[in-house]
Length: 202
Image (cartoon, rainbow, N blue to C red; front, side):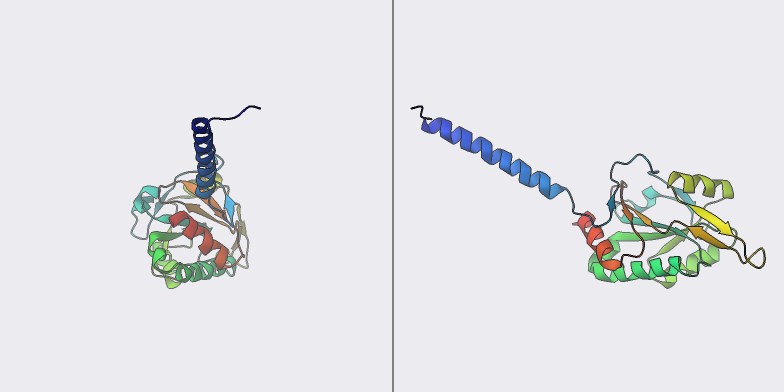
């Protein structure tokens, strides 16, 4: 009958303990997101260049160290946009002190009507920490929506200024290192969003 000596037993035990520790650590590193994990995806842009209400160019680098939640909409939106911003307002409350490490950015799909003044006022009405950014031209808007796979379509109204815009209702989340991590689904309520943002910060 073959027997292991004590030194071999110690080595083999140490080996399996090391393997177990590696598995536990590896499992612990992967967050359990409620939303769509798009980490490492090459299908979406990893950057943006937009104008703030003062006409200054802002990029992802300006928010280094914060989670960035990027939502596309327009100030005349009758339903999806205010609902999403209200939802994010509730998320910020649920985040507690961690909310100061989150930057919500409302990106205009309607630069014709969304003036710099409106973009300064509209998102901040939901939370003073929310900001509005807009593309500098129609061509920049077209490129931006292409980069982020955002659908939008102007629907004519009773006059040229009363149109509405059908658009993608989800949001994107960049982590504190500027990496695109999540696609947030619309209409799920604030709890799954707060859960995922905390996972990225803790």
